Length: 381
Picture 1 (tube, rainbow, N blue to C red):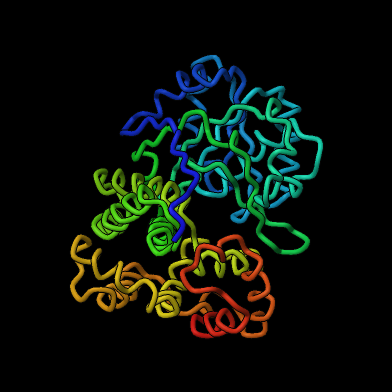
Picture 2: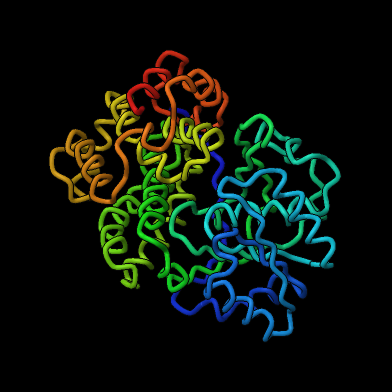
């Protein structure tokens, strides 16, 4: 193992109930006077979104929203968002919602001042240096789910609508200037979204903890993130108004995305092409894939999970953890098979090809090949 790494945890987070009331102050801190709130279609008409627009309007910051955002946002959504941003004369973005709203909001702020296609800024080598850094608008992120952790990230996942490939678009200045984590905003999440987003956070922590790269800070954050999900997701799932559980899950979501600087692996390499082809919910897809991936990686990761399971309150070391994951999924209403999400056997070659080119491959403890990925998809199907 090479004891070298690039570490960065600079996000400014305002965490706690009713912190959404501080949104005007956050806009002032970011230098935003005419914000565009970007969210998804499902959230646009909900009371939580309208109440947030009320706060912005009451502070003299206008009332502007863009919500043409698909569950797996693509470059068509992005072009429409950039057009709305320019037409409204906006000077910053409030990215509001789950992963799709946060990811697209960040990209609208990023792309509004760029001249090249978004694909030219994919997270490959130093492609991010192609962007005009001075033209990136300030971003405030307000998560309304507890899962993706996009609010603390320097990248967005955008689906190419032509090729059905998910691409990670990266730039250091895509990191939001201010994040408002108000657990009261998550109280209205339906059960299946609570489960799917919570298990996305869990997958981030499990994969970061499993990754072979050197990052002891991420390792510690991933372990505590797993514990929070195990302890509090069942409570948030059974009682959506349990504000302590909602707060702990919101913490776990930010922790998962902070931890995966250490790397992701086969779970995400599989779920990205599945989501792009079949428009499945990302976190739910991760959860379905996790048992098969744990089996693949077992020999390499068993010892580190043997040490961790005592802290996680799970008996039986790695084998106990593996059994627990399937029981946990079952208790949260997660399907056991990818076929239950609409995935078909004939799509496996395309999904394998997509997985092999996904950046998450590099963080898997076992090297991913066409053969073992094919076996993984067949096992999960």
